[in-house]
Image (cartoon, rainbow, N blue to C red; front, side, top):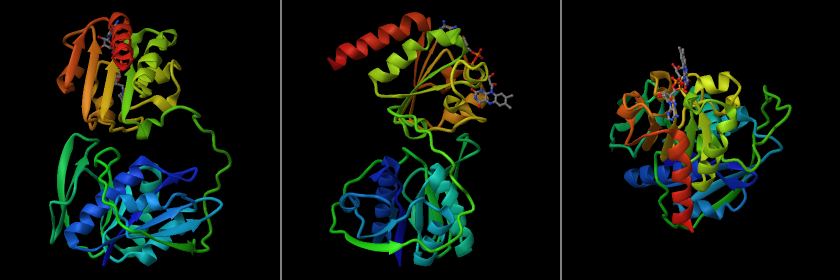
Length: 310
Ligand SMILES: Cc1cc2nc3c(=O)[nH]c(=O)nc-3n(C[C@H](O)[C@H](O)[C@H](O)COP(=O)(O)OP(=O)(O)OC[C@H]3O[C@@H](n4cnc5c(N)ncnc54)[C@H](O)[C@@H]3O)c2cc1C
């Protein structure tokens, strides 16, 4: 048996969460005493995977990534645990693989397995409000690893690169157009996020949020009413009905901390809240809190960060 891991890339470069998935797969492989085999489509610099402990990589080339075809390829190669990132692409392909293998699927895993006979993993459930320890005795369980949950671990190893073709499977989805947020940090993958709520009073005040975000190389996000009112694009809306994120740092400015907002952000490793109401519910979930007027605190914070960096 071996541990199979799907490694996502964009414009030829491995995504950070792909390397997290590899580090996680290597950890599991060590527990079983076996190899890690990666599958990647259109990635370059495949040797980078060897740095994180991949023994062998199937390098596939395709004009577009047909998820059905990738799922078929992976299901054909699976001979043990199969690992994906809990990303948009991972959560599209992983269930298809599980169906083909008639296997268990366990999503949103937070850390290395607690045991392998049977396999026991810890996962978040109910939008991060609860934790569950799940076990399976399946031979080819499919796992998705929460983004930013597992640190990169170098484990240099000699890697064998095998080229392969994607199976000819009809693609039932046609991508018409791709619009990229050029230069902006992807919110789902960001390590740091600065988020603004209705306390910021209007879209004209977002300059200070963007400046703070830039100073710490963070993505920007917002609460639901902010995107509903068109102050910010819908793509920045986080929460129960928006994106669920899990950055290392979530800095919330002028956001009350309603349960629906927390549902999308409470898996963040460190939460910092800036709010002028000491009774704001968000403080209960915060690691650090600043009670103060955002219009005074945020510019001072940005200035202090810039000074520190200089
Ligand atoms: C079914 C359903 C789904 C929902 N899904 C989501 C979701 O996905 N995401 C989401 O965000 N919400 C969601 N909501 C809405 C949610 O319930 C809250 O209404 C919303 O999160 C509040 O947004 P807010 O905190 O920006 O605004 P408010 O509740 O108006 O809070 C503004 C905060 O700013 C503070 N403030 C004001 N002035 C300042 C200042 N000068 N300096 C510092 N702080 C200041 C105030 O003290 C207050 O705490 C959902 C609601 C429902 C019913």
